[in-house]
Length: 230
Image (cartoon, rainbow, N blue to C red; front, side):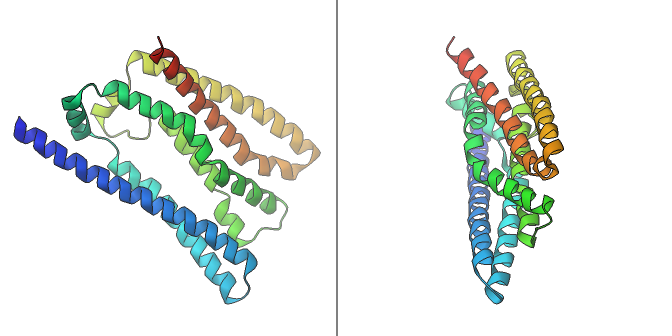
C-alpha cells in the first residue's frame, strides 16, 4: 500500500509539473499574441508580417495549451494522494467554484478583442488579425461553461464520482438554468439592436457569450459559498 501511495505521489508530481508547463505555454502564447497584434498594427512591410506570424503563433500556443491541459487534469492518483492528506471532495469542489468566480476576470481582455474583431468583420473592414482574434472570447466562454457543467474531464470516472453528488448536481442545474435565461434575454436584446444596426448583432455575440458564461460561473460560486457557510 505504501508503494502504491509513493507511486501515486510521483505520478501526481509529474502531472502537476506538466500542467504548469502547459499553463506557461498558454501564458507565453497570450503574451506573444498581444505583442504580435501590436506590432502588426503599428509596423509596415516586414514588421507587419512578423507581427502577423507572431500573433498566429501565440494564438496557436493558446489553443494548444487548452487542448493539452485536458490531458493533465486531476486523476485517480490525485484523489489517492489528497485523500491521504485529508478530505478531497470538498476542496476539489471549492476550487472549481472559485474558478467560476475568477475566470470572467481572466477573459475580459480576450472578449474585448473578440468584440473589436467581430465589429470589423461585420463592417467589412477585417484584416487577418481580426479573423484570428474573433474566436478568443467565445473559446474562453465555452471553457467556463464546460467547467460549470462538469464536462471538462469526461474520461475520468473517479473524478466524475467526486463531482456528481446530489448537491453539486443541483448547483450545476441552477447555474446552467440561470445561464440559459441570461442567454435568451441577451438574444432578444441583440436581435433588437440588430434591427437598428445589423453590425451590432455580430459584434455583440462574444459579449453575450461572456455574460452567459460569467452568470453560470458566478451562480455556481455563490451556491457553493452559501452551502459552505451553512
